[in-house]
Amino acid sequence: KEIRSKYKNTLLVDSGDFLQGTPLVGFYGTHEINIVNPIIMAMNIMNYTALGIGNHEYDYGLENLQKAKKDAKFPFLSANTYHYKTKKLVFEPYTIKEINGIKVGIIGFTTPGTAIWDRNIVEKNYDFGDIIEAGKKYIPELRKKCDVLIAIPHSGYETEKGNEGYDAKSTGIAEENVGKNLAENFPQIDALFLGHTHTEIKEKFNNGVIITQADKFANKLAIVTMDLDKKDGKWVVNKKQAELFDVKDTESDKEITENIKKYHDQIVKYVNTAIGKSDEEWKSDKARFEDTPLMDLINKVQKETAKTDLSTASLFSDTSFIPKGNVSIANIAGLYIYENSLYAIKITGKQLKNYLEQSAKFFDSVDGGVIKTNKKIPGFNYDMVSGVDYKIDLTQPIGNRIKDLKFKGKNVSDGMLFTMALNSYRQSGGGGYDMIKNCEVIYNKQESIRDLLINYVQQNKNLIKNDIFVKNWELILK
Image 1: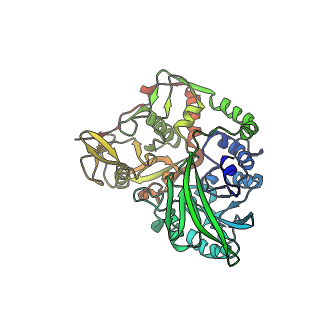
Image 2: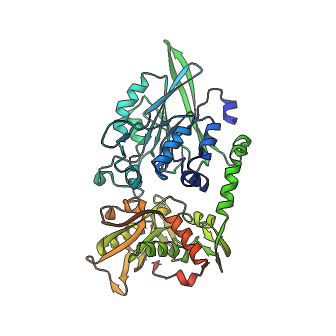
Image 3: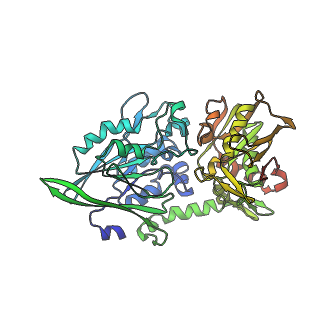
C-alpha cells in the first residue's frame, strides 16, 4: 500500500515457493484442503498481478496446487511445465496486464529440479522442460504483444559450485538456475525477478536486462521502477532501477490480519499443543560442530522407522531447540521445517565414504582453532550420519578428510553394503550428493519426517537425552 501510494502504476508479482513454509499454509494444504488457503486469501487481498510457480508449490500434492490456482484471483504461470510426455502446458505461460495504456507482459518459469525433488508427486503427471528452450518459444511471441516484458522464473542467477541442487548432465534434467542465461539469451526482457536460491540480489544488469532477487522468507520486497517515453508510437523504457525494501519495520495490514485471524489463531493453538516433556533443554547452536542429542533424535526416528543400519540428517536451523518442560508441535516443526519425506536406500562403503567427504566440504579451514565454513554451502547441505563412527580431519584437504570410518567396530571397506535412511531431497542427489542418486530405494511410504518426529514424541512422552544420544563423530582441528 505504501509503494502503491507512491507509484500509481504498480504491479505485484511473486517468483514462487509461496504455498509451503509455515504451519499455517501447511495445515490448510493438508488437513483443511476444502477451504481457501489463508495464504491465497491474503494474496487476493494484496491484489497480486501474477505468480510464477516454484518447486515447493508441489509439496502438498497436485490437488492442493490446482485448488490454490482455482481460488486465486490472479494467474499461475509456468511456460515450461507440461502434462506427462506431451508439450501441452499445465499452466498459462504468460499474462498481459494493461496499466495506464501500457501493456505489461509477464512470463513465468519453474525450476526443472522439481522433477527430482518432488518426484513422488509429479512423476508420470507433469514434466519440467528446459527454461531457455521454453523462453525461445514464448518470449518472442509475448514481446510482440506487449510494451514491457517482465520474467518471474523460479530460478536463481546461476548455480554456484558446491551448492548444486543436482547435476544437470548426469540426471538429464535441465539446468536449475538460469537467470544469467535468460538475460544473455533474451535482451528483450526488461526486468527479471528471480526466486529460488535464497540469496539477495539488489540490482544487476546483464545484456540490458535488470535483475533482482528479494532474499528469502518475505524479508524484503524487490522493487523495479521504470520510466517510459513514447517514441514513434511505441513505448520505450529509457530508465530503470532496482532496490530492496526491508519489510521488518512495516506494520501488519489490518485487512489481511482481520480476514485470516481465525485461521491464524487455530494454527497457533494447534502448534502450541504439548505433546511431550523434556527434563532439560536441547540446543542446536553447536550441532554442526559437535555431535548432539538433537540430531540423534532425527536420525533415531528415521532409522527406527525405516529399519536401517544408518541414518543421515542435516540441521535446518541453528536456533531450533527442545525446551525444558513441555515440548510442543511448534518445537518439532521448528526443528524440521521442510516438507521432506522419509526414504531408505542401499549404499556401499565406498559411496558412504564419498557421501561423508561431500558433507565435509561444508568446512573451509581452521585458523587458530577457529573453524571457518564454506559460505557457498548452506547448512542444510551438511549431513551427520548415525550408525557408523567417523572423524572429520579438518587439517586435511577436501576429499581426504574422513578418518577412522567404522561400523560396529570394524573398518568400513569399499565393498561393504548398508541400508541408510534419509530424506527425499537428499535421496534425489540434492545438494551435490550425486553418488547416491541411483542407489536402490528400499523404503518410501511418503511419510513426512516432521510428522514422524511429532508421533515419536507423542508416543514416548518423556524425552531423555541419554536414551537417544550416541556419540559417533567428531571434528579433528589439529
